[in-house]
Image (cartoon, rainbow, N blue to C red; front, side, top):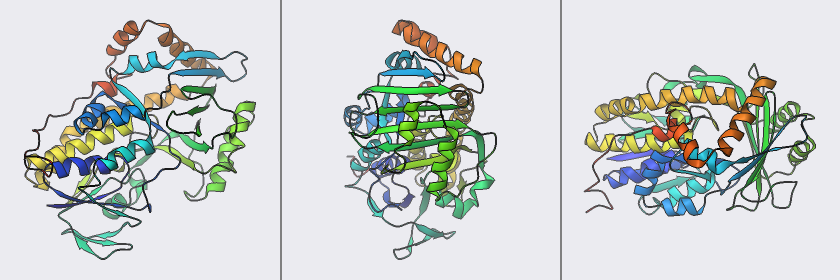
Amino acid sequence: MHVLVSGASIAGPVLAYWLTRYGFDVTVVERAPTLRKTGGHAVDLFRPALEITEEMGVLPRVQELATGTTRMTMLREGARRPVGVDLAKVFNAASDRHVEIMRDDLSEVYYDATREDVEYLFGDSIAAIGPDGEVEFDGGPPRRFDLVVGADGLHSNVRRLVFGPESRYSAFIGAYLAVLTMPEGAGAGPAPGEYAAHLGVGRVAGVYRARSTGDARAVFLFRSERELEYHHRDVPRQKELLCEAFQSMHPDVDGWLGELDHTPAFYFDSITQLRMDTWSSGRVTLVGDAGYCPGPAIGGSTSLAVLGAYVLAGELAEAGGDHTRAFAAYEREMADLVRGSHAFALGAARTLIPRSRLGVAGLLAGTRLVSMLPAAVGRALGRLNSSGIRLHDSMTVKHYARPVHGKHGG
């Protein structure tokens, strides 16, 4: 069977890896002209996603590229003295196995694991999908595939073509995320391994430097009771909205915003969940953020995408390529994980972007407490809350028989 996957970020290459292991032929189409290696932000891989990554044989590379961020200072707006936080203990409370890595680095690791066995079409995208697998491309000639999978993110082109406009399924949860890249030497920023954050009512700003990059990333989260008016390609308007949201927060934050006119990479989007009754239609299905994004930066979407890709490939293999059975089984296996991630993200948004001064104080106190506790105590307390801080670590996925007839198998 020949499967077309749209999107070469995280879910796409992971799905391609497992499908080829099970003997499927895979083509991945990516709108970008090359693998994306600019901008982006740090993402988290928790225990289940790390176990899948380990089975793929690339865990050492992922660990080598980990951001190494272990320390954080948090300064409440209007205060003079920051609070120090041991992030290693915070992560330890949340997960027995965890790696934070830049999204672009992770994408490259997964791509490298598949590029010898998968056909990649960069600089092109899907223009139309027929009911029998006929696919028209914006650039290349039409082709036919047995199955088509949208792994093309929150603003999925495949989802739009098959399921209709994004507005039918997106749910704004009251906040926005922005990330800008500050080249090495530009602006003030912490040393590698450190994260400096400023916390106020309805807004949080921070900056960090990963070990694998010479530049810094400034991250901004802010609340809005209503959806803001801007076009998704109107970058000047997005920068204007960001500056308005963080006006006069702190001289450090002003300095980071001062890099907006010079940044080589800028990202701005609402924190939105995708809520769909089904992710499949005929020969087409969705995986990762394209089908069930819990909310960028707050819902564990990267780990969920890795799990979803692994489960989809496994179900297709168990069903012998019968997509009707496989897609139904895939949705059953992922349903509870998706619901849990959606609920977790809503709670995380309330906690990480406090609505009140009391919420700010509570976040500071709680984070500092976990940081001060012995690691074993923090881990034990975390395990008592499998639907909260330990949600992503506690996820379990079905075990699939190891491939025996795939391109890498015997």
